[in-house]
Each structure stands twice: as structure tokens, then as C-alpha cells.
Length: 93
Image (cartoon, rainbow, N blue to C red; front, top):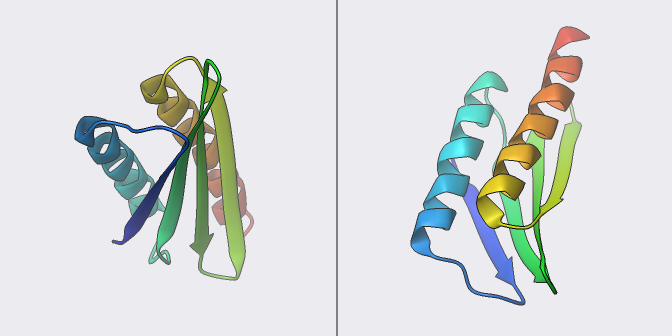
């Protein structure tokens, strides 16, 4: 599954990028044949922002953002929020 990762206004380690890929890959498995996903990692002063955009079958778009003091925590919260949205969408089918 294709996960595009963009980093803005900062630099992140390869470990963080790999963690983002792993977390989103696990989430995409639940989505039943999802389209490619986009993750944006951004830093504004002392806050780290993680944003996910993922299309799933049926024309639905899952968008989740999280802002924390570090990227690992922001990624975890982002995936948790996306999982809730994904469960709602898949439960309505």
C-alpha cells in the first residue's frame, strides 16, 4: 500500500517516517482496498502536527489531525482519530 509522507518546516528521522508508514499500513488493512494515503508532518514552534488523508472505497475521505509535543505521540493520536472515523464509515455500509 502506498503511503506518501511529506515533512514541512522541520526535519524528522527515518524512524519517525517508518513509524508513520507502519501505523498507516495497519490502518489501511482495515479499510478494505484503500487508495493511497498522504501523511503530512509539520512543526510550528513547539508543537508537532501530524495529518492523514486517506480515501476509502465508496468515495469516503478520512482526515485526521493531531497536535502534540512530539511526533510519535502526534502520530499515535492521528491514527486513533482516523480509526474512529473509519469504523463509523465501515459500520454504515
